[in-house]
Image 1 (cartoon, rainbow, N blue to C red):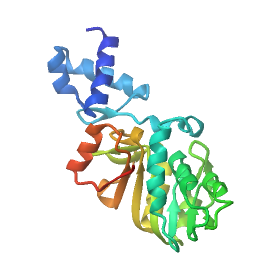
Image 2 (tube, rainbow, N blue to C red):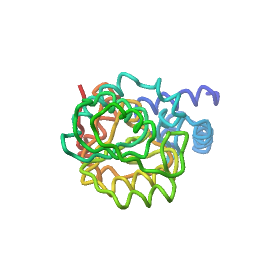
Image 3 (cartoon, rainbow, N blue to C red):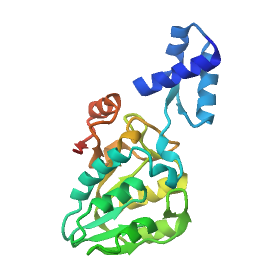
Image 4 (cartoon, one colour):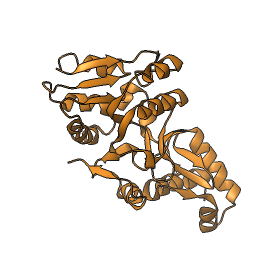
Length: 251
């Protein structure tokens, strides 16, 4: 089998199974394990897979820039956002992450709802201008890829805050790798926000389920639930259920 055809097969297996074990696939295809590992390195370099010990897992499509993400899985994000908006209760204090699913959550939120929203995203803050909610903006270095503040100043500002809930955005929700994102400073900021919240819920639109990015945010055990779209890949949802991850299914 030619290398190009083998890579196509590897990508198909990743989509179907959510993971590739290099040793097993080498035996199945009758090629060396080194050949499979080389293919996986090249897929990783192209942003199509993420190498892990013994093989690879699917790369998240949610790591593209903010503008491009606005056209990814839009229907799924709206369904997840409607459910996530219902988690914001009158009188509560809620931290809302940056990102396109978080923005869709604000768009689904009742404008008359009286609550306090904390965010490190200028995009989220601007979307709340016509809402009754009080808004607290966390400042810091602007990470333009996700339109959020990050860095040491932002993390330090978070330490003086407390919230009832945190609506966390990630680029990967995987039963083994946990919750991941594509930038180390952004991952640190998300951990800091989660640490100041009584409970954390993950915004898990379809393109994130079963996918992995390079930097760990939190283990699955540290969150109260993952809001998921029932139309997400069944293999990814089934794997999360086997881990006993609380899945909140949007409708």
